[in-house]
Length: 242
Image (cartoon, rainbow, N blue to C red; front, top):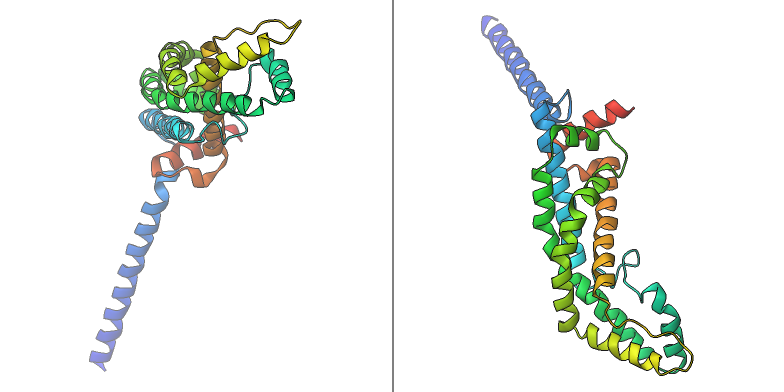
């Protein structure tokens, strides 16, 4: 009888301790995304999110067809040249126009990979006030921050890369050929054959379009918060906004 009681007691103790261990593991697993994050955690969490988002955007756009295959950022003829494009296509020069569009997008793809270090530098320079404003701000607060702080640097960095890329992929030649062909049409305004400024501006705009998408994703999609720190910081932001 005594042996039976001892066995039952031992079993109960084992169950209690096992239950406590399981409970502790559950609490530990849940805790990273709960509670109020420290100032340091908020800063590190937001910067982690921004590095992920800007890096992903840069990688996507610098891949083959990153611009050309993405309708939201695909670069077409400049607005002032679209009448020329229509005229040239009507004259049977559709292939030349297609070559221009493809080459413009290839040049932008070539330059997009240069954006990463510029964004990383902007992220490192963020103040605590910047971090707070972005975390608790509008859905595009981070995108607007990058527009303010990186556009000038991006333009300076992209312009020579774009120019070199335009030459490398024959965009300069194709666009110059298109301009020459159009200029031969009677009674039309001549086209400016220099297209590097336009492609630079469109490449930068495309980057911000993709960054805005990534920012919205991490703010609204719980599955995009891929680390415990991101979960904790953005859960805190969700509560503050609700």
